[in-house]
Amino acid sequence: MARAPVLAAGGIVLRRGAPPLIAVVRQRKRNEWVLPKGKLDDGETPKQAAHREVLEETGHEVAIHEFLGTLVYQSGGRSKVVHFWRMEAEGGQVRKLMNDIKAVDWLTLDDALARLSREYERAFLIQVGPIALAAAELAPEPASVPEPTPASATDDIDAALQTLTSPEAASVDELRHGVLQKVKAWLRGEA
Image (cartoon, rainbow, N blue to C red):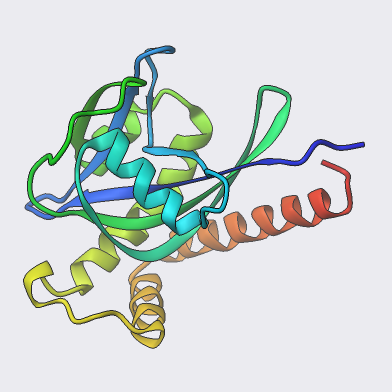
């Protein structure tokens, strides 16, 4: 019988500026640069886990915005399913990094892609990074952000998707299709 997947959540964490910067964290144990994420605690929703893990791993309080997608990969003989949201760091670091994390670095999208140690995270960020950056450009500055409504979040995503070039849009569609196929296979017990 297939083992249940490990559920995790995290964020594509942005810091506004010219250019905007993306957070990547360095794991102490493996000395790898990764996107901030972690496993869900008992009773925790993926969105709650994403917020907690990003705070623990980056030391920054964040505002959570649109859901960006799901990354599925094999880890320790099990499937790991990680849900990601676009997040924005609010101000400076507010707490020490958790013991598992050696450092946090803020990089441009291209530099973050070059720094990431895991190919599957790099491929995911290639797909969702431009969407996250476009959505951040469309959003008002944090001081004037009204409480988001589901309709405005959908509008932001739709507007961000419209800014993609044809090859980028095709890549997003291909990623969505691949994730859907993996989830269907997992539900059928084939993964």
